[in-house]
Image (cartoon, rainbow, N blue to C red; front, side, top):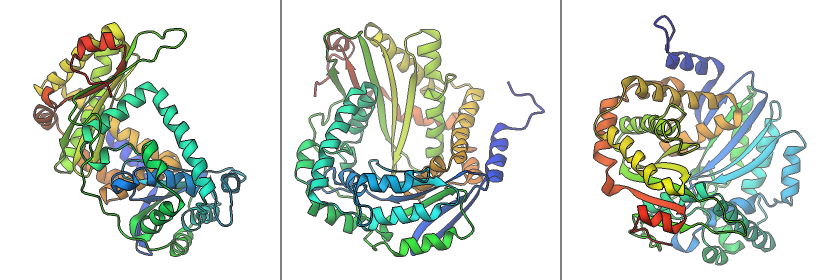
Length: 449
């Protein structure tokens, strides 16, 4: 418990964040940029963030963003292989990589402070001059097949990703970012070049850079951006997606038994989809997410782990996509205890819906959420990802002070009102990976994909 004479943790975090780093927002060559100077950081990260992903892909090009992300790193005119691209950065002690989400593709380079020119050089090569030859495309399709298998073997992650797709249907956003075997088979180097020309340029991106940036970085970045194509702002397609789980509320994938049967564990994801009307609701949902499943003091971890010893961990995830919110509960429990776990989750959510929130616990959840964001500013890569996502998705740079002011408006009463309106049993969906005999006792109507 905090003593009355101690400063508020939120204010302490805000002060530390503003002291450790200076954030500047500007437009360079028409590109929104967010730059964070952290004088004591030993590294610099530059991230080029593009509005891309399944949210923007036409029906016939499902998976093109993720495949293109792989192939752009496969080689460029001056760095003709993945090894050459990587060695150019890694030989200086840095890292280069990329990732795709449902609505954003990001290329980033992290290097020791003082080597920002190298980061900009490699990003320019990858974005402006990728080879995209047919052999590389074919090779990366095989790699993506292995990536798909790796995800499927992570049962908790697979359940969570599958549930999010169910919650977002029938929007194109609901499609898995990796695509399907059939959709990838239809994509060739010409399709990738067409997508590159249309989406990967100055009018469809933001830039985030963080760490030990030099006083000349702004000018260097301007020159680097001038070398990129203009492209066009991405537009979201309007078609509806139909999948084997369309309209399904509960889905089940049976556990695959090996030579030695695995223990009967159930991987469970429960979730809700709802509108997020304004920034106040957005902040409130973020605190609710922390209250329910972030940290061992969260309500679900108290219920499932500390009191009942059912789960090693129970986590929650909240994502927001242009006014659509998705809240997921993820856990793994012994198969025979699946029904009890679902009941416990239901009781915790019901308590929230009925207004049974301890104000101190809600305040501590807000502190946990804010602290996690501020701590990301310590590392240049985490900071660049945070700044880029905020600028790309919310149209505003992350500000420790401004964010805290908004977060202060989140209150228990509003959280309960939102929960009562949206976290209802009729709107809940579930995806589980478990022994079918045990799972169907709890979810008798579950559909097997």
